[in-house]
Amino acid sequence: MVDGHIGTFMSQYPADLLNDTIFIFTSDHGEYGSSHGLQGKGASIYEEGILVPFVVYDPGHRMFNSSGTRNQLCSSVDLLPMIVSMGHGGTKDWMTGDYGQLYGNRCDLLNILRNPNASGRDYAFHTTDEFVPEAANYLKTPLHVIGQISMQKGTDNNLYKQKLGVYTTWKPYVEGQTQATVLNDPNNPHVTEVEFYDYRTPGGAKETDNTSTSPEARAALQLLMGSPIDEILPQLASELQRPLPATYQSAQAASYAALRWYEINANNPVILTSAEENEERLAKAWAL
Image (cartoon, rainbow, N blue to C red; front, side, top):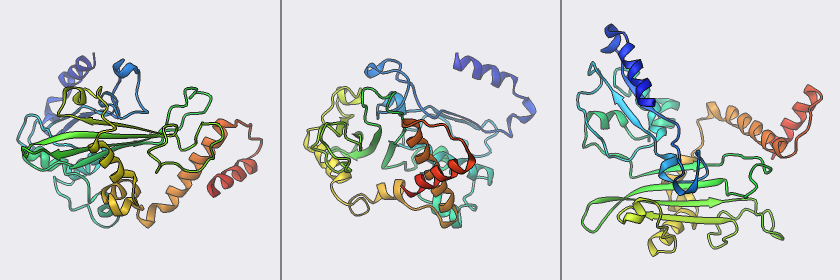
């Protein structure tokens, strides 16, 4: 059905604009479709939920001439610099100052489109802290997820993919436990669950053979969680924890405060009776 609607759109697109247009087809998430016994999206690192289509069509060859399939690893966060570079005639002359700090380390998708042999990412992260009210999460599903997809070189020098997933509650639901952060305790099954898939095996490629107790998995987990992030895994700090440019930090703080306000009141609903009360609650959330 989706293909049909895309075909209808393309057939109606004005011919005189075709060679001046670059078409990009992608999505924000996948669909489980009953794989792994799941429906919808979210709360996991499974390929069906996080792998998205990415098709770029340049009928006028304004940005690239080659066609075919690319197998390099990339991430959705690489899309914006590609699109902006296209708007700047295929150059990176815009990537200076704050923009350079924000996007300078992204994978160069435009270069991959131009050159099938260009380098992709060595790794990509799928992370989520998506909030679900406690009343809706009756199975106490861990909602803090880090998925690390990496390209490894085998003994035959060929690259292969592996995926590490860490699921954490942060707020333990085990009676008697404290509210202390337990993200760095991979041995506590009540608060941290681990998955590891080696794509060289059929079960690993299907993400049905979880080898989270293998030496490779434990080494990857230790690398991710066993030491200060900026010392042992600088790419995680670079991708997820690098501070925004000073220009945007106040907006970031305000957004975080609004999120905390929502989280608190979603689990403890109240009716706000005045603008002053709303401001007071927002200030309290800001302080958390």
